[in-house]
Length: 344
Ligand code: TXA
Ligand code: MG
Figure: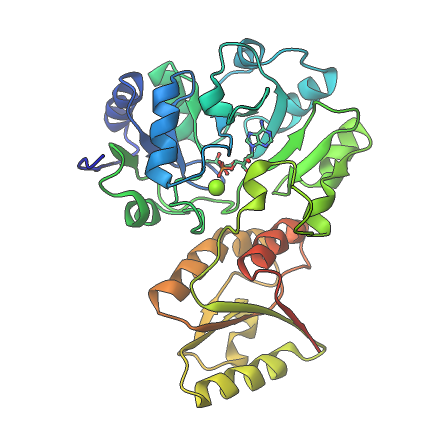
C-alpha cells in the first residue's frame, strides 16, 4: 500500500482525524510513554494484517492490545486472576503489559494464532484520547520497520513508515524510550517475558514470586523465548556493536577505537554524558547520564539510529547496568550487540 502519510499534531482536532482513520480500518502511529506504536483496530483482522505488512513483520508475532479502561480487560480476556487486578490497579495506566487467556472476539490475526492476548493501558494522554475517541481497542506493535530500533520520535516513525500508513500523531520525544514490561499471568507463577521500566522487584513487592523467562538471561539458540517477538534480532544497528566491560572502560574503548580508526573505519562510541570528555568529541554519542537510568533508556534507540545515519562501521558502547532500569536497558543493548561483549 502506498498512501500519503499525514503528520498530525496531538491537538484535540487532529486526534479526531486519527480516530476516524482507526474507525475506518486504517493505521495511525501514536506516542505512548514507552515508544511510538503503530495502531489499528484490534478486533478487525484486516487492520492487523495491514500492521504486519507495513512493518514487514512475521505474522506469528502477536500484537499488544491497547485499552483505555479496565472494563475492556473482561471483554478481551477470560479467567482474569486476582493478581491481574492488583497489577492493573498499581501500574495502569503505565508501561506494563499483561498476558491473559483470550476470548473469542480477539481475532487470531491479532494474537499471531495464540490463545492468549497481551493487553496494556498506556499512560500517554494522546494515546488514551485516541483510544477513547476512536471507540476501538488498538492493536499496536512498536512503529518501526521490523528489525530496526523502536521509534522514540515521530520523525523515526516517518523514516520507517512514510507512505505505508495513513497518519502519525507527533507527541514529541517519548519519556521512557524502551518498550513495556511484559508479564504472562496464564501460568502457575507469573513470568516476565520482556523486562522494562516496571521491574521484577516492583512486581514481586505486590504479587509475590515472579520468574523471568530463562531465555532472557541465558540466550540459547535452541530455546524459544516465550514472547515470540523476543526471538528476532531486534534493534541491531548496521555497524558492528560491542559492549565493553573493563576496570578502566574509557582506556579500553579508546584503544579499540584508535585501532579501527587507523584501519580506516568509521567508528562511534556510546557513553554517558559524564564520560564524554574521555573520548574524541567527533565520535562520541551521548546516551543519558550516570545519575539517572531514564535518561539512558530515553536516548538509547535514538543513539542506535544515529549510528546508522552516520554510517558507523564499528560501535563501542559502555555498559549501562547500574540503574534500577539497568536490566531492561542491558537486555536491549545486548540484543543490539548480538551479545558481543568485550571483557578485559
Ligand atoms: O511498550 C510497548 O509495549 C510498545 C508500545 C507501542 O505499547 N509496544 C510494543 O509492541 O513493544 P511490540 O509488538 O513491538 O512487542 C510486543 C511483544 C512481542 O515480543 C510479542 O511477541 C509479545 O509482545 N507478545 C504479544 N502478545 C503475546 C502473547 N499473547 N504471548 C506472548 N507474547 C506476546
Ligand atoms: Mg517491537
